[in-house]
Amino acid sequence: MVQQLTKKVAIVTGAGSGKGQAIAELFAKEGAQVVAADSNATAVNAVVDEITAAGGTAIASVTDVTQDAEVTAMVQLAIDQYGHLDILVNNAGMLDKLAPADTLTNELWDRVMTVNTTSVMLATREALKRFTAQGAGVILNIAAVEGETSDRASAAYAASKHAVVGLTKNTAFMYQNAGIRTNAIAPGNKDAASPIGIAVPTTPNGNKIAQTALFLCSDAASYVNGVIVPVKF
Image (cartoon, rainbow, N blue to C red; front, side, top):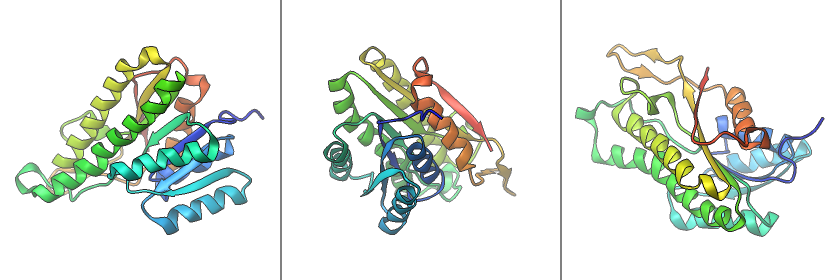
């Protein structure tokens, strides 16, 4: 069976658990050399151990993706270890406390926007330095259905994911002639309503998201750019 990501180098943020772990493991299974990034050292090292035990290639990058210097170091690690970078998956993110706008604190707003949106910008900006120089690269952002609707979840989370969608589409347009593709996955659909009418996010199906990520980051999707792909779970 032909592997879909043979000799590709991929960074996956938030790879210590959940959908990020599923993406990292599947990418390695499909032949990618993976930089698994997460702020939780224990978790991300365990994921790397699982990947290597299964015959894959991966290294851990203990990274706070909200810190510019750490993001730069994460990308440099990929270059130092594997010689180049082909794929960036911006998966790291957080939920909030389902707070509507009138109960939001400045601290919660800033934290959600920094983790969910600023981190995507930082990693994208750093990866683009490599991608533009080599004339190729793939960026995949993990958004959410809340990023294209206005009546789900809470104010900060919805706003942060709208911003990720906007950043995805703008990056796709701006670099479409530079050999760089940028897309996003929007997991969701089966959210259950809370007593006050706010949709409560459920746990995403990591395998479905990982399979979609594999397609979008592979050469099979060479014609796909600027698309937000919904994944139901």
